[in-house]
Length: 233
Image 1 (tube, rainbow, N blue to C red):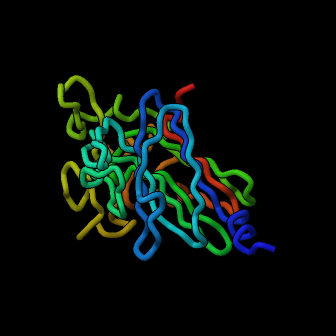
Image 2: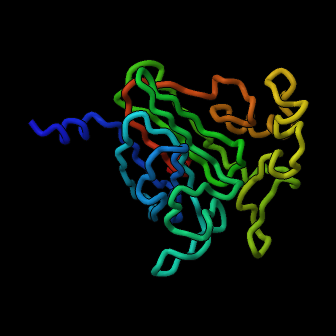
Image 3: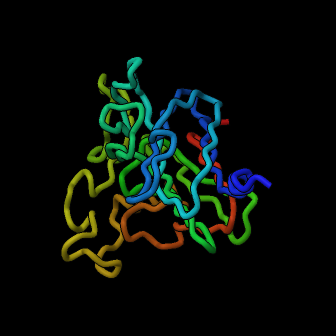
């Protein structure tokens, strides 16, 4: 019996699927002390999927970069979600605003959510399958760029379109929006007009740091499908 084959077959997989009409460059940032997967980033053309095996008890975040150009050595830049101008993020996070898919593998159950705490750039969903327990859908399917308040907008170079939507914390850097200082607890940091816009558009996503914990989903021994632009047919 090949023990390696057994461990791989029982390992959790995450499949990233690009339903957008344009390429997406997924970025992957492991939590501290966790291994980097797929060098932290790669290119995913439209209607293509890429599957990774997650080590036991792995945790980290995934996001989509778009509007990227890289040279043969993997140097360049992305319009949103850029990680230091590199194709391979190598452990670096994405520059906000970027929609995040967050996954933490546990012994008994896995935790996952889609977060707008760092803002929004692309619609993302997480769909678990082959697991037991609630295993509910998490995601932000709406195009928040279409309804982004002016003060939070990130516009394209030609100024013609909104390419991302900042979180109020990133835009204004105030304790009330960032849930810091006197607002550093769930009791004192309540939803704001901005986070309510995010929550109304994306009820299955974290809209700010102390959002309702029901935004975190759980599943036992499932695999995960992370879809970019899930609303595209």
